[in-house]
Length: 258
Image (cartoon, rainbow, N blue to C red):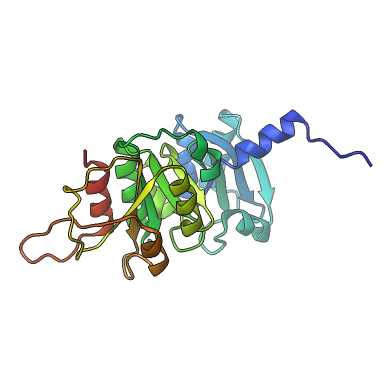
């Protein structure tokens, strides 16, 4: 029996779709279509829409940029947006080369002591996620390791909080953070966590290999599983009785630390 071989065009399409971030909501999609720097792959619209000014503008912008438009039932569009309650019947796919699975790049990442990744372990607040993405993008850090299992969702609110930098950042997806960290460790990376009781501060630490700084969730901090696989526990020195920092503030300190 002959095995069916995918055409180069189909293979290329499958690869490009892995690098797509889908955003939803009328204003979010309108802003995306107005930004000429963004590569919009497709606009999705619910066929239950009343033809109003906003919908007309969305269609006009998509046509002017030669963006494909697909019409769907509300149920079908909810599957695309993954948030039928808030998508307002509009979603669009944005091609972002930096948005990919970590296995696509792990073997060709730079392996120096200045290579730095931020991994997120249970971040729940989309504003924090967006602010972390913005700091990482602005710094020399390579990017973010973002698990799909958990609560760190790249939502329109997170994208808005990132001030558009989510489309420029290296956002490396993984299913399970513990598994991904183990793969990076086998590739020469070391994993650090923040612990207010750690004997060494971030300023005492002199990395001799690529580093992944793992930041824990706002409520529960670093999970036990991540603590077990980490190589170093560090603390940010505090004064005047302050016990901890907002996770986005901690991320900014780590990514700009030379």
